[in-house]
Length: 83
Image 1 (cartoon, rainbow, N blue to C red):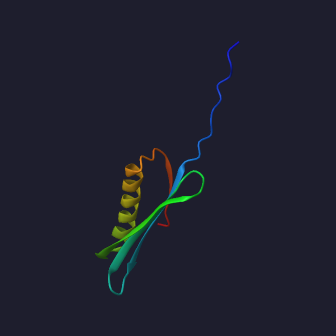
Image 2 (image 1 turned 60 degrees about the horizontal axis):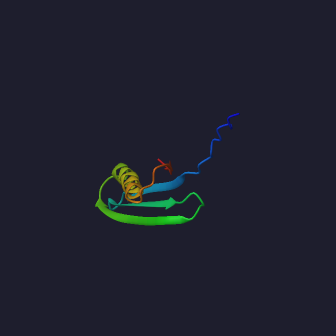
Image 3 (image 1 turned 90 degrees about the vertical axis):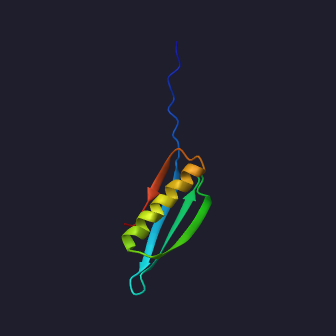
């Protein structure tokens, strides 16, 4: 008799990304945070982008988050955004 295949539930990493732009001075930044499957923050970073639009700031935050996930050899991640 063969044993049934057990499907393991895998809890993925979780990432948050956000960009911000101050419209009065046109200064923007991007930040991101990655949590391991146990809920511990393993990477929190941000960068100053200088003058750009809010859309570019949001897009840059996602790119930086995904680049860092690749550098950390993360294979699966749920990404949370506010835009």
